[in-house]
Length: 403
Image 1 (cartoon, rainbow, N blue to C red):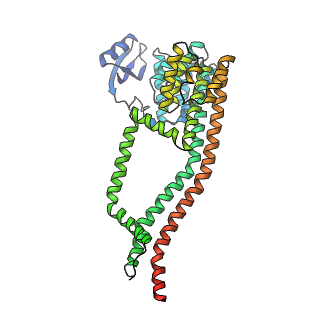
Image 2: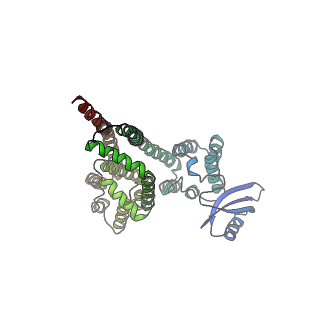
Image 3: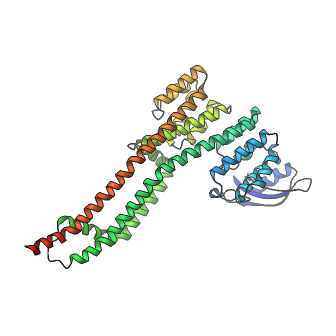
């Protein structure tokens, strides 16, 4: 399926510019003819292009998409038609890419497709979760309420990501400072002292020889070390993008000491939050299970969600099927079982999401508070060892002169 950008005119002579997918130019022409559109021009674009650059993912932030849904919910809730609201939002935004995205959606709707179908044509910005919620809102006549739920969901998810990022910023800074300090010591300080040692007529202590030898090795083989690190990074990156590689990394990620537990909690929080939002939007449990695994950011949860979906389709209970997969915590399974018995499944997912979200944030803050002094202590120990190694020959020479 190729993507085309076309320029046409409707029966009233008004210009229509939009992007759509088709098997060929001939099929595109036939479809536009069925809509009574006169094609002026059409061209195929690459997967990263669009009629107004809206596929350039880096130019539209997640906060802008979230704010877009909040504004749209407010306007539609106030009685403004969907197309008029989209037209007004396109005028208001100062982001050219976002304006092109909104305009493209409006044109698609004016050409006769549903809002959810128009959003589905821009999967970079509107994942299946969003389109499924909008489709449910369209079918149930709750579009304004669903748009509000989407904006809240996106805001909560962005807030969690910001908190994790903020908590990890200082340890990353300490780590970078740590590496630069080691580089300074290895490539500048130790060679300077080595020049001084050449004038000594005493044998260097073992610790000093080890430090100087390590510096020699790195200086002599620096291009090869850099090449090895870059090659290893590229290999791991490419392998991580394959399905087996992603699965292996996700397994290792949740099994890491301390940090793995935080990764697991964040993934379960995403899983529960998405499930709760979809259920409140009227999406069926089966459809929820098709979507939530992909949102959790962990391939193990994604595979387990698919297995649970198949089990539920065969007539099993959601909690019973989830109990078969260790990736789902026992607390989550018990709460879901209670929700199934009491008819409050959505509420249970909300409670579990809050619990794991708060736990993940608490453990992240505690871990950050512990990592910082440990990294500083490690840096101090390494610097101290190097300083001792560099001054030992001086102390030895001084002792020899004194004798």
